[in-house]
Amino acid sequence: MGVCRTSDVPQIAERLKTYVEKGRHGQMGWMAERMNWRGSPQDLWPEAKSVIMLAEPYTPDHDPMDVIGMPDRGAISVYAQNRDYHDIVKKRLKRVGRWLLEQAPNEQIKVFVDTAPVMEKPLAQAAGLGWQGKHTNLVGRDLGSWFFLGSIFTTIELPTDAAEPENCGSCTACLDVCPTDAFPAPYQLDARRCISYLTIEHDGPVDEEFRPLLGNRIYGCDDCLAVCPWNKFAAEAREMRYVARADLVAPKLAELAVLDDAQFREMFSGSPVKRIKRGRFVRNVLYAIGNSGDAALREVALGLVEDEDAVVADAARWAVARLTP
Image 1 (tube, rainbow, N blue to C red):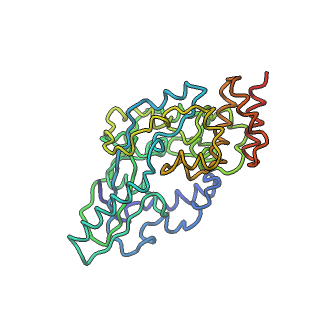
Image 2: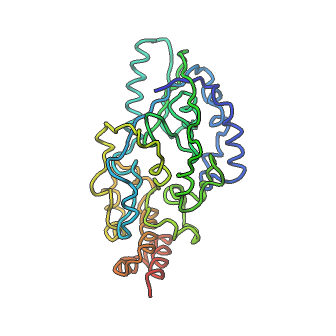
């Protein structure tokens, strides 16, 4: 954990404004909404004096890059291979918050985990938890790359921690590994080219330019995190609900493609994957099938060319064409 002031990130308002003006947020309209709050924690809650930033590791016990070499399997981002972190982290933050209010009953708190207009990564850097690397994700000396962030805003004036300086040096491993060249420059991300954005946030058909570059990534992408040298110091995950489910480490594309809505909801109950719904998920699976080069999967795709979801049907036709000699 670390502590900073709401005023310790004066640079984020202008950076956010530039990002949105360049359209790099893609379809994520929520980034353009309430920009005054997102760009200024003081405006979000003027009474808040301190921000407590907490990090919780979800470091995998397997190499997430292994599945990339298995064309008949799907790659699901490590953070989504078990329970939804929003629920787990928020409950823990609330528990800490209750303890804090027992010590200072006349004060107030607000708890945020990823869903409010809060820019957690700059705040976490200001609180000394790590720094935003060249891939824009947070990297910590003692945490590596694999951790969730949560924040407790409070009216209590707490001692602050020193901000963490940038420690990437001359390394460009995260930039070089990106399949879609989503980084226009170090420390800059164009979400419209990012596989995590394309497979999770992007609604409708993915541009055909990007479909072959997705490979077998069907929910998110861990490439830029996985290659970071600082992971040699990654903190061990201690929460069993973050440990990957065996069926989600390298699931078979043939089995995922034929999930109907009820089966999809059952399989991903309690998982972050559930929020993109069956249509977008099967769309991603079909792109992976099209990229597999596996003729045996052509029949699976062929069975979905008339799917009632037009985007799924489009993806199925694309996959069939890719696998047709």
